Length: 365
Image 1 (cartoon, rainbow, N blue to C red):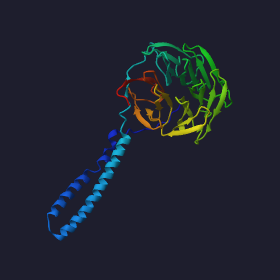
Image 2: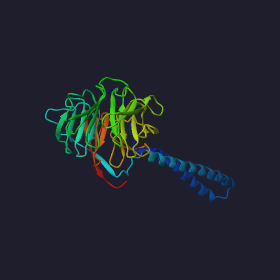
Image 3: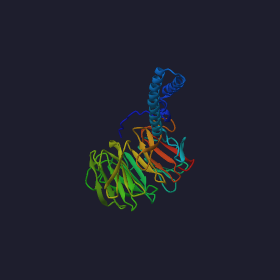
Image 4: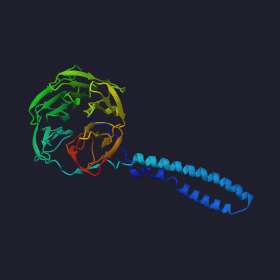
């Protein structure tokens, strides 16, 4: 799908230093003033005593200004400083996937991991659903006969594989071996309860509800049961609460809340399971979202070419990557997943690859 490119500039932890030490000249001035005051104290000249009073006033003003600058500098530094207390690191692994001989990946749109540790990669080329074992060895592939433009892929609690296709406007469910189990949608774009218009992603509720973000054409969320029976939908096109400009990703957290990546509004909207708006988090383009085993939310922001870790209030706690082709860099990270050990997998559209980031525990956060 077409991507809007916005070049970003990284801010470093030390970018707050000019604010932290605006003050080096000020510090020297204060020292000079104190020295002058010492000399004046030793003098008996009345005029010099008056000068001393002026100097005391100047010292007080400068000292107060210095304290304010230091305070602002510390705050600015703390805002920019990468978090050091995550309790883990993520290190990119080179050449994790072992592709079949002569096979190359096209645009990689989604990735997911099942309970066995098997990894499913969705790409826009031949054999669009690829399955690998936990060591990256190729196992099987399928989907040429039914899929046209792959987009989202998720694995449910029974290890069934669900995918969305924006080319045929349908959602498919397969067992882990690729056997078709269910197909939703008519194959034609539309807004009826049995139709989609370029659906983007799937999420699963605590009672096996199936939520589908629909999508490029309809700007709504649809809810079905596991058998594919329509239950409800919510959302229209727009910028207000409960409206969307391309609901691109969707996920259900441990509290049963439905998080919708409202991509073109640069926000995540959060609803209860019945579609009631709860809150909104702003400030990023949530192309993809995934939760780790501890409920931490990771976001793929393809406009920034980064993966973000958000806190419980939607604030960015940590960023990984920048635009580029090197290991650990990204070219439009589209969707992502985490396995039971917390290893991170990122599917890149423009990069035409999937990267694995190995998690290593450091200290408890």
